[in-house]
Length: 114
Length: 112
Image (cartoon, rainbow over all chains, first blue to last red; front, side):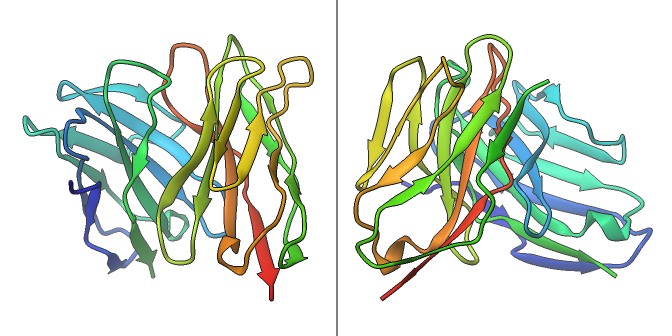
């Protein structure tokens, strides 16, 4: 049973560029959440998707946007990159049914903005 | 708002020592509480969870009890191993929402 997968593993961009990160949820899960983890910090919630719509959003600017596809996979897009966007971006999946269901995390994408 | 406060690290212990990592929370409603572990270069793995007051979560020798009266969820292990060296995160999901709110993490190093 494949767990949550993310691509790419690492990415280097320059300020002002745009980036797209990808996530495939665990088999049987239809909800995908994205988190940003700065170095030495806990993850911060960006947004959550299910039924191909953004359902919840954390305190992140509109430069951060996402999409969910019919197969439940998801993309995170960040426009006009800033140095402060350098972080580990984590995707987590879960069943939609209950708030107590565990969120399973992927290995993350390490984004470096120069 | 919702928040999680964790014991500051880093924590360094000798093998077979007793471990406690403190975690307290602020939340509206009745949150579910979680401990996640992050090994070097990896994503987060769920260690244990508790969904209501007085529940005890346990896994791999680790335990934590949901204490509503003290708004705490302290992580304990009776005898740590070198392989337990990692960063530990306390987290909650509040009320009906399912977004996780994390603490800042506690780095644990266990020496042989």
